[in-house]
Image 1 (tube, helix red, strand yellow):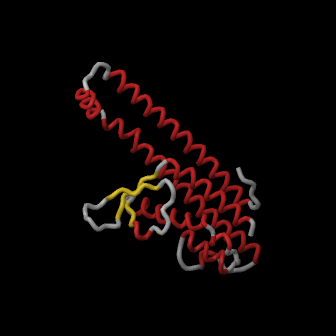
Image 2: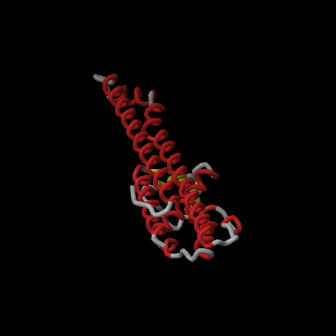
Image 3: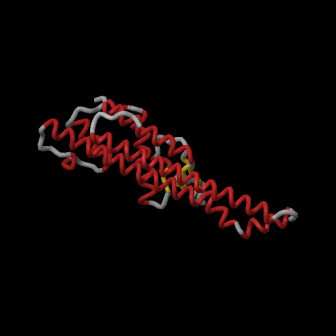
Length: 210
């Protein structure tokens, strides 16, 4: 874990460590389950013709899809949302830390907006913390905000035209049958979470140096 300068940072990074450990454990468990299914397929189709194997796979396709796609998506989306909520809480806690340090009556909750944008507004305008919000890490985190909104409010459907930066490991699958549509179904690949953990930690280091 990266060294932290504030209690808020220490708590946030500790939460990230736990979430990452849980994520790795769940991915490994699912991969073992998928391997077990493949062994089951091989042992039960020995001597089958190609057509018979195809029919067997079709019969058990729901089980295969669970381990190859459904469960990984549930794991990744759930862990991603929790990391995002933890980061939002971290920014809010930093705002409260600065409020005490500056001895001001103005609270981040008094600012317009909500979520990470409200915290950013408080930190930049009231606390003069600006450099972290000019970084590539912040650009990625703003994209995470769009992904979060799509997952929470729109059943994983995202308007690609609103996504200025597409993070590594984000898969956008055509959702609408219309030829001209900017709506896509959002899925997360394994590398997305790996990169997100690195991004949050890097941003924490930058903002703690202010």
